[in-house]
Image (cartoon, rainbow, N blue to C red; front, top):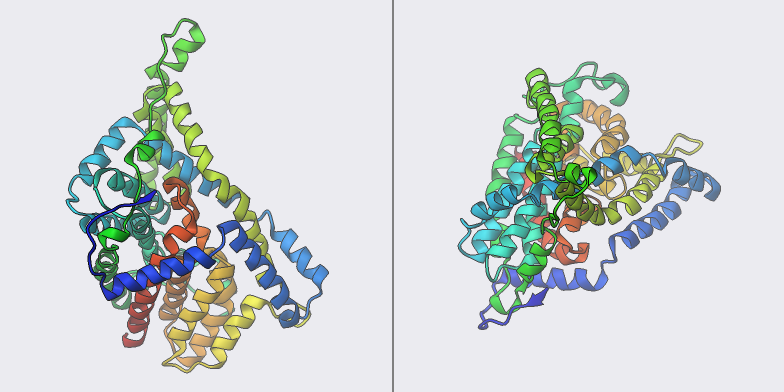
Length: 460
C-alpha cells in the first residue's frame, strides 16, 4: 500500500480525529496474536484474586478449554476458504465488478460497502463478513483514490448489525426456548418471540438509526487526498488468477479438467440447498452458509483443477484463525471458571454492574457490562451462557422487561467487536491487512454506535 500524492486539502474535524485514532492504534496496538496473549496474561492475573483460585487452577481452566472452539475454528476457516473460492470465480468477479462500477467517487465507495456489509451481516454474520471484505477489495481495484484501510474497516463495521439481525445468537436462543429456565437461572420459564426482540420497536429504531448514521460516518471519515492510503490493483487481482489449463493427455488429467465432475457435484449440492430452505425456511447458519459458498464455487470454477487452485489460495488466509481461536477458548475458560465460593471473573463483572443499577440505568449497565465481557468471551453463545444467569434475574427483580435485558446483552456483545480483533480476522485475512490498519477507524464507529444504542435503550 502507498500514500497517494494529491493536492493538499483541509481536513475536517472528524477526519483529523480518525487520523489521530489510526496513528495511536498503529503505534500501540499489537498484532492480533499478541493481543490474545496479553488478554491471556491479564485474565490470568486478575481472575486469581477475584475468584480465589490458585495459579495451577487457572492453568487448568485455560488448558481445559483450549480446544473447545475446534469446531467453530474449522467453520470460520471454511468461511474464509470457501468465500475466497466463490469470489475468485470469473463470473462472481464480473458481478462484483459491475456492482463496484456504481461507485463513482471514493466517498461513495465507502458508503456503498458499509451499506452492503451491514445488510449482509443483518441477514447472516458469516455471509456478511466475507461478502463485505470481498466487495471492499473489488471497490479498491475499481475506484481510484479510495483509502483501502477505510474500505475494509467500513466493511467490518457492518458487523455491528449482527446480534440485532436474523442470525443473532441471543434473540435466537431466546426464541428457541431450549433450556431457557436453566440458562436464565429461573428468570424465564418459556421462550420469547423474535417479535419482542429482533422486531421490537426499540430494536428496529436502533437499527434504522445505525443504518443511517454509520454509512454516513464512514463516508465522512475518508482521509483528505494527501493522506489517502491506496493499494495497487494488481496486488488485488494477483490472488484471483485462474489455474492454467494445460492440455490433458492422461485419464487423470482429463478428469482434473472435466466440467462434468463439478457439474454433477453441484447438482447434488444445490439439491440439498433447495431442500434445506424448503424445509427450514430462511434459517441461515455457518454450516449452510459454507455449504452454499463451497458448491457455488464448485459450479462457477467449472473444473476440479481450477477449484483446487482457488481453495489452495484461500487456505493461506486462515493462519490467524487457526492460531488465535484456541487461545480465546482458553481465555473464555478462565473467565467462566468458578472459585470455591462459586464466583467467576465474568460473573463478578456482571454482578458489579448489577450492584450499581436501578430500573432506569440497568439496560445501559447491562449493555456496558456485555461490551466488557465481550473482550474476553468473544462468542455470542458463550457470552449469553455467562451473563444470562446473572443479568436476566436481576432485570426481572428491577422490573425491566426480559426482552430488553436480552437485547442489551446482544447489543453490548456486538458493540465492542469494533475494537476486538477476534471477529475481524476473516475479513483481515481476505483483505491482506492487519488489525492496526483498520481499528483506528473502528474506534470512531464504536463511539458513535455506543451513543446511538445507549439512547435507544434509554428512550424505549
